[in-house]
Image (cartoon, rainbow, N blue to C red; front, side, top):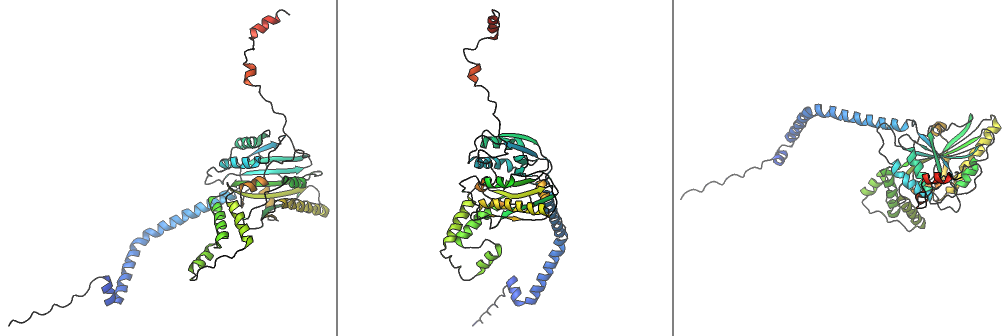
Length: 397
């Protein structure tokens, strides 16, 4: 009887996993050798490229920051004379039409263009004008003014720095006291500029008061911030990065927000501001000056500054403006440097910067009667006679 064939020995598995299980120390050593070889081949090429990319990004960031900090050169002034009748909705049409003009693509070495709405009060009266940066057409701004307020007359001339007359000055900036997603008060029964113009007027001697509203289109990230804030108020989820990461890592679900009537009002206000488009970035500044010296003049100027900042309390709503005194305020006021702004909706900008609604304001220049051409049918009618016939008829006299 033949003997049975021996059973074949089981084959051992092959592959990276079997090698790791059989010889773990050798596997880690081989992995280290492979990584070292890869680093020796790749790092001499990747490191210089990464350094060059970082240098380019840093250079681009420095150039952008220097371009924003550099004072605007040139520019033009659009002096506005008041029409006989000012419509309250004209400011909404003006800033809505001006937004595409301001939203032109900025140059790398030049900041985005902006417009400065200025109200100046002095012993000569009240002046209204618009400072337009060099990258924006001043005539386009003048046409926007004439379209929004029919009858207004605009005079375009080269800009000069609004130097505050007198060595004694008091300058500052008005900023939002609450988060930007809370709106200012825009539902006014009377013109909100009435109190501001009243605080600027009635100067004696070389005294002068100036209010600037610097406006430029808001960036897309600013409008997205308003939308995220509205959603956060409704859902109760935080908008900052670190609180969102902590909330995502929690094992227990987040507690639903409790019913709060103030939260409901905040959601309504946040949604209204996020939908009040187009959005703008705005900076409000003021400056006062006088030619007198002494403690009494300084005290009087400080009182006038407090009166002027208090006049902006008419814009108080869910949010309000507070005065901040910073170093270099006079330099930024005179050079019309935008700096750091705050996001406002269309109705808020229209309430801050518009032509006064009041018909009679002492010291405010009004537009003269405009010359109107006769209708075309008057000169081209069938009754028109030839000039030669007129000469023949005149020959009889």
